[in-house]
Length: 215
Image (tube, rainbow, N blue to C red; front, side, top):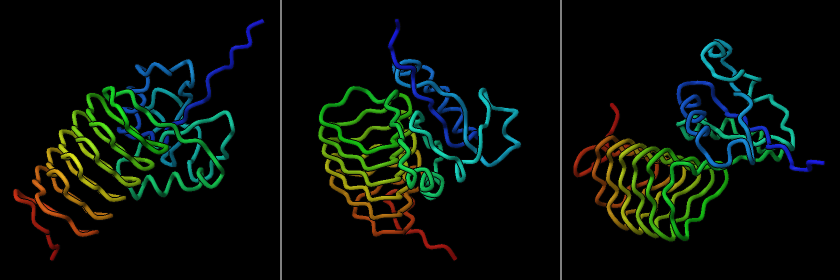
């Protein structure tokens, strides 16, 4: 008699474009069909159901989690990830980390719910919090620390020893020089070159990066 346990049900939070892209990445993961299998999306936008490869099963804010389910939050904005993950975390739900696109790295530690798009390279002894997203072709140096819910866009370089806070957004093609500290909730603009420490909650643009003040 076959006693092999069936894969857990993997549910993707968000049926939008990013959610469908994450579904596509998951199809090539070695754990697909072994440890888990994607069974659907959770989204409160019913109009998206016609465009998804699998059904939209319900609203993540009201979904009752099962022990046989794992979740992956496919929302790019840190605040949105916090909002839609919170009700499930309160139920003790399990959030998986998708490492498909991460090149083999030594000594990397990460929390739950992290996601790596293709061709991400990471140096040794790097530590990531929960729900960190690193998009395609970015390079993270050695001994970097990245806080919870931070999003790092495509083609970003983060130098060795840098300290990136929680809820940070780093847009594509930005450069964070080695040992620079980026405070919680900061936003780094596309193509910015960050050469000095960044205070919490500010927006930095330009090369060299300077604080952008909204009028």
